[in-house]
Length: 319
Image (cartoon, rainbow, N blue to C red; front, side, top):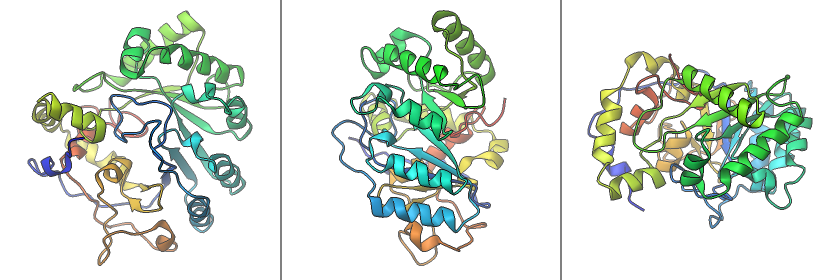
């Protein structure tokens, strides 16, 4: 695996400062039932890092003592963490809106047969990764048979009321290689038309995300001699107006050990939340602490969030 952080100082991303935290994004571990080419987490079946019950308890304590009302749960496949359902249940009891970043195929894994019903019962928003509406391209990126499993999972979620009623189902698109995502609204219309006509699948929104030049995807770019070219593309497409809406201004990212970062991408690069006098801060240490105005740790990978229409956990920042 090629390290890309040392290559992230050429362009000098603009300084940013935090606003009031609105979303707590928690990575429950890097274990996943898939190993995707574009994965910025380098997740896979062989990874063993999983958040402990004690650390999930810290998450719940933090939520109970803060004004944050959105819990964004990610991984790996977050559902493979043994404390995933307990975390969801208790967060919902606190009145917190829960988002599950789901790879869809997890719904067909042994022991997860009732997962879709659980998510529906708890009114969890599902953000599901489906990197293309084409079977050929999805299977090329994620492995043979993944597209079919994903479609069956979407149909199961639809049958429970996701996508058409008040249960929210959003999909995520990633480019196949070192290019920027196409216009989100147009691609969303194509997804809805093709998935609807071919499979009867409905969903709420499509989020387009740029591939980040870190971990597995970044290492692949280095191996192919495409890293500098991709960084030039991101830097050249930078739009200053996107700086106002980047997710790191209002989001806290927590890793499986409870360490806090400005975003999931910084987590993968080992760039922790900047707190004066501290190298690393645990979530439990931030209870009652105001972070608005704090400097955000930035490097050149941040251009992946401001290039073109912009990219965030909720898709494009501008049309």
